[in-house]
Each structure stands twice: as C-alpha cells, then as structure tokens.
Amino acid sequence: MSFPWSLTCYETLGSTSDFCKQQADQGAPNGMAVLAHLQTAGRGTRGRAWTAPQGNLSFSFLLRHERIEALILAMPFLVAVAVHEALSFWLPDSGLRLKWPNDVVCEGGKLCGVLIERGGTPQDSWIVTGIGVNLRTAPLIEGRKTVSAAALGAQIGAEDLARRILEQFGLWLDRWERGGFEPIRIAWLDRAHEPGSRLAVQRGPDYIEGFFAGLDAGGRLLLQTVQGEIQTFAAGDILLLG
Image 1 (cartoon, rainbow, N blue to C red):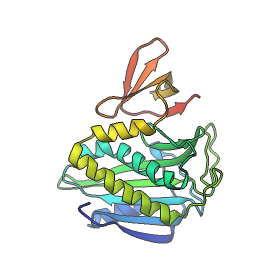
Image 2 (cartoon, rainbow, N blue to C red):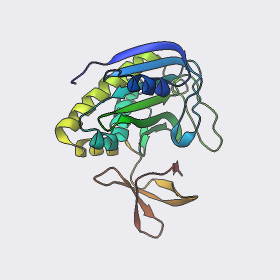
Image 3 (cartoon, helix red, strand yellow):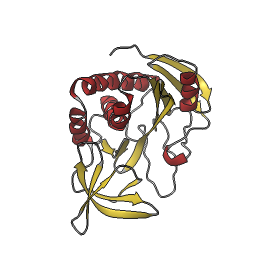
Image 4 (cartoon, one colour):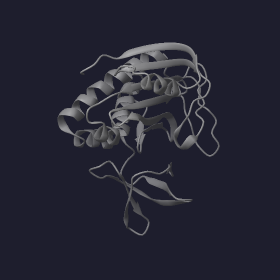
C-alpha cells in the first residue's frame, strides 16, 4: 500500500459517509477512515435508509487515486472481496456468498451492504466507501431477508472488523494496481452465488427473472433469461429467488 490507513472511532455520527465526504472536500488525506458506534442517519443504495443500531458496524473510508476513472468501476468488487475475506476470519464455515455487485449474504439473508460515492473536482477527485455490517442485530426490511453475525454464531467487534476490512482492501487494491480487473473478477466469482442461481434483476419498473451466468470483463452482470437469452446489466436491484 502506498499510504497508511487512519481509522478514527466516534460514539455517534449521523452518517459516516457524509462525514467522510465533508472531510474529503476539506482536503482530508488518502486513507482516512471513520467508524461510528451509533449511526443515526445511515444511507444505503438508491436513497434507502440503512438501519445501524449500536453494536453493528458503520464505517467509511476515503480514497484518492491517480487512476480514479478505472478504480471507481472496480471498487464494488474490490470492496466485496475484501469484506468477504474479513468476515470469513470469524465465519469460516458459514457459507458467506457475494451478491452482485457488493452485498454479502448468508443463507439468503443480507449481512453487509456497501455504498460507494464519488466527488470532488476534476483536478481533485475522491471516492468514499461506506460499509455497514449486521454484527449484533439484523434490521427488519419488508420483502427482504436479513441476517446478523451474532445469529450465525460469531461475536465480532466493530473496530476489529473495520481494521481487517481495510487491511484486506489494501491487499486487493495492490493486486488491482498490478494486475488489472481480471484477478478481481475471478476472486469475486469464486465467492459469489453459484452459476445458475435464480435471480431477478430490476430494469425500469419491472424485474427480469433468469439465472446467474457470471460477469463480463467489465464486471457487468450476465443473466440468462428463461428464454435462454443472455442479458447484460451495469446496474439494477437484485433479488435472490432461491
């Protein structure tokens, strides 16, 4: 790694990512990370609220990089693999899997969510990554199954997990810098739900059902429809159908 991580823990923050973004705009250094033991205004993807009671992990980190255009495309997969590896230290036999692009699930329930945001100026761009993990409590979300590490039999300290995620992410970032996206794509696929898993992918107001057929060279989801057609998705809400 070309920079050290600097993790600061707070008792309470509204949103660790919002705090990180504010610090980024004020010139905070590469590798800054913040953790909140209680997050009161967490955000998920597509503007959803992210429930983060005390005891769960809520943290965000800042990256500045000379290849930020390429990095922003790789980030969901780099982060997903890093979080999977970090959690596997405490949950080695629990069947943790990755759901495209960066959710960590177990037994069909969501254990971890990631929010990646880019900002700054063309001359000084940055990426803030927010990570939430259900360590002690799994929130109730209508229509979605969730799970906690505690329910899976692991007692994990939030700060311990944050530091391990940063360590693993640094290793995978180095591999990406040296080898490009392909090693990351292979590692992600090795930890993902099985090929042929039934999925539904949102496109507009509708969901398209089919079977997981892997990732293309750019990380886009490949879905084989029930008619046998392969469709490619660069974004969209994903449902696991069993």
